[in-house]
Length: 346
Image 1 (cartoon, one colour):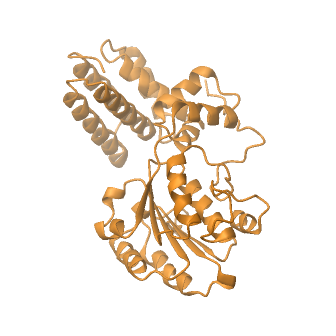
Image 2 (spheres, one colour; image 1 turned 180 degrees about the vertical axis):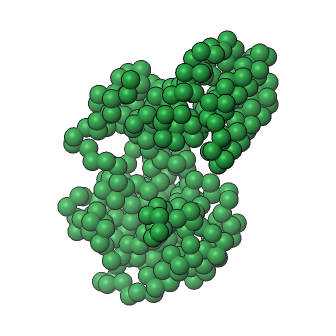
Image 3 (tube, rainbow, N blue to C red; image 1 turned 60 degrees about the vertical axis):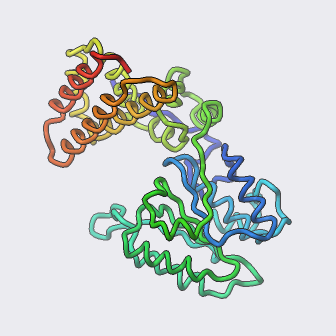
């Protein structure tokens, strides 16, 4: 039976960081940014890092709106909020503020899908943008979302922009994995790390955004979304939550596998578009969450679970890339989980 699609509360628009004026969590990072900006001494490059969906873009747009409305002054609120009817907010929401540049992966004209990398042509737009004369002493703000997507040529072009920053300009790099960026890029930016949301913060947001979500489903989302409201909202759509719950059940029954249930799961996934790929991602993430939790508790014998996680990641990736039979992949995953759980359940 198909899962009923969860409805977003009517007063809440689908998430768009341009339009999102409320910041959930991240008060320490916000205080750091506020002190620097309101004291008139912000860095010319900020590296905003954190897990996917945790609110990096929302955070960056909050800084951008403040700089475009008040500049690097203390004329605005300490929480860097800007009213929705402020001219800067109105223009940012509409995507038409001349002082704001967003650099993202482009769309492949032949396929209509996002390109796999953020190319050098996009990054080179920074030179022209920062070379413009800002009107009335205003600021120019550029956001790279995400810097992880840059190819080597784009990274080198970005480095040049960081080496020759103009006055009253801010470059914000969003990154899920800052350790993979060039060390020279990292060294020229001030780091702002956004931590996963707490369970209480995530629960409050889910209550507001998905009022018809059941208590059990909400607890599942909180457990498997790793403190990311973006991940939680994505999981709640379509079959995402159901697949994530199936992944949790497969791990839970690893020590006493139910072959019939595993076969039924394999058949189900074969009928869902991208079902096996998505299930594999949820399964690996669920294992990673449990391994982290056990490690924090001082658990031992985790090496075999880590090896299994890496094995499953390769197996599901190979199945999708080579269009292999997903049923065999699911059965193999169930057996591997059972073999590993014989020593100690996770």
